[in-house]
Length: 494
Image (tube, rainbow, N blue to C red):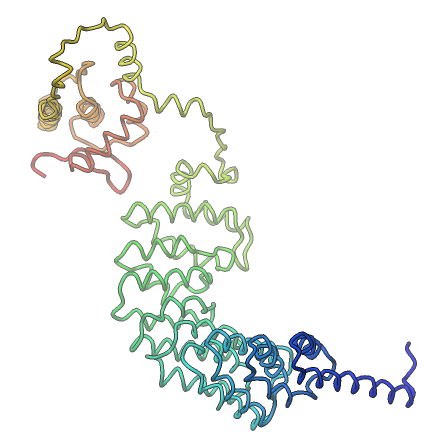
């Protein structure tokens, strides 16, 4: 434990400190720029430098920019009383960037428990801060948090009366207020912005939490689907706690992008399991395949991630009891997840098998024919005028074979059976229609993808040709997929 200072020691320490400050003050008036810069550097770190605050205020309009910036930094961290007015008046000579740096210095001072604590001092700071331009509104909002009740009332007044002219950067500044004050300010801002300035919605969505996200519901009236996507993302990011109100309105939205945003941004760890089950019970029956696929993947994720106030074992039991068919269906499309808890073994990918699947037998046959073909002679006429390719004829032949396959399919559906035949020269489109006709039977029932992939090799179709042909025929409206994933061809009467 250190011994207390004796009176003589205290007097000596005070004398040395005063002597050091006096030397700094003399050097501040020196015409030598080197001594002047050294004095400003010493002043910023000297103990008790606030004693030389009047001298620093005299340097606020100094011709040297470095000296001027150092003086503003010292003043921002030390001014009080009437000196506050002098500093803000001198800030008129600064450009917006330098003024912003000075405001940041004030914010650092307020954050270290050196903010004004009397009502008169707080009102003095508010009067000077509100005279700054709109470009400094975000920093002014941040400073108002440290100015007690007068500062909160000033921010509330700005939101109610000046929402149309409010800077977009001022909205994130509300996040520094206490939970109670932030919730109240977000509610007021949402009500005003929904009527007068809807472009603030993305910025409001960035500061809401679990208790304040409900205030975004005022934006739903007359909203666009892009705005509802923003709301759904904010709600999902903060977690689903109650399966009612705003959440169910978004689940029942007519636009699939809204539901997609709800599932893609979902925070499972911050949500309640029961609420998620109710939400997913609607989304797994969604007609849009992308939303339905995301909902089924979310069911699988619920078997791996723990929800709030729940356990993994309980979640898995309830999932298997209520969504067993959907889980097994989603397991085939989500091989990247660990599904051993579901009884599905993880398959180790074989790179060679994937490569072989992408290379069709027809390509090998074509390469072999080109390698064994006899060379053909070329005349000068062939070199001068390249032989035109009859693309229209080739396309017409392909369409004719496809039309023949469709006519056969129609006859089969009408009750006239015909044995399906495939020749090596048939196009992939005709081979696919012939295969679909054979697998669908007389009643023209839909065929599952697994069955199509198993039978593709019998009709000389590789998996790559199968998927490419399906995509082209589905685009032309010749075939379609049902909600259950079954593939069928459209009749001519359709």
